[in-house]
Image (cartoon, rainbow, N blue to C red):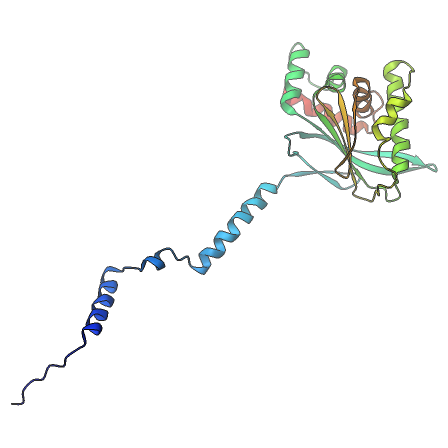
Length: 258
């Protein structure tokens, strides 16, 4: 019988075989592989934050029906959309749509104001006292105007603004008109500012009776005057508003705050 010959295996190969068996049996993963992220997971990690950001930016809008312009229902500072409307101007005997507007206010401040100043139970419909409180108070409110008339110029805006604000001041003061005060609001706005369809003008009443004007996100004036602040919001919420439907909707938006 022929002798059995044992093949000798080099020690290095034996070590390699044992290491492979240990990995297979214990399902061990090398340290550098434990921290390795699969390409699919890397892609998911990159996409997830962007998706979350998009979700945060999704704010509902309300469309002004006569112009089709959409307004966000909430601003970054917390103000809520209370009403939308349209400013129409007679040009050569024709009623021309000039801009759509949205009126914004602080719900909590409005609620405090109404509950502290109006006695009795909640009213069933908007009252003059409710509108007067919104006009006369110094709480933050804002009107965002979005241009819809393609032929509008900055000079035309100034002229119409001065006329409207001047008429409002006359109603509140019994006939007095302060041209110098009126000119401070839009007078600093350069005539070179281009106004196209979709341009935005924002006029905000800041606490302390300061009226701030922005044109395409650029501050053009800050006028500290209780009269100017009252006269400005009187144009939208007073006895002869630019858009009666918008004024009525603003009033109705206050009723649930009681």
